[in-house]
Image (cartoon, rainbow, N blue to C red; front, side, top):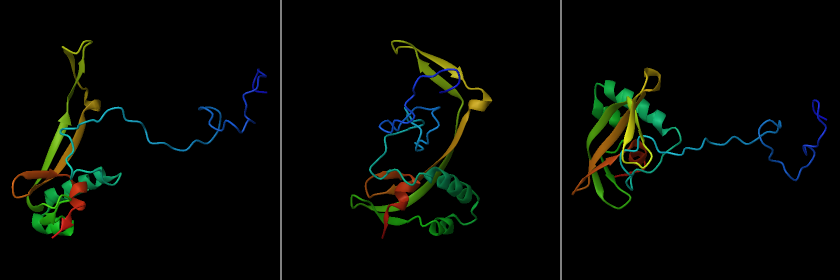
Length: 158
């Protein structure tokens, strides 16, 4: 019997172990669901595969270190960034440039019903999103290939 009511909640029923919140049962921790992909500038290329779950933190540390490095070439060597590498498709890659970019999202748009017009809202300071982007630009003999840090660490060094 619970406070002031006497109906059965099935707490002793072991055929239904997954009770909802508030039933004082341990639930396995799940990752939050993401219904959108924020800040996706371009579709990922073959080389831009997802990396470790905390690769974004590693990229932030890399950007901070690279920006203040007196010798960028030595910094890249210490970080095991290959200057020449072999891509998964067999192309020989040569590192040309490391790009870092600071981005601040200061507004948001929401389409009106029907999608032909939209609403624009400037974001208050507390909602402004700041992030840094890191890209390694390799040349494959024909084109430039921008790769993220996860893709670079997956390359086979020549």
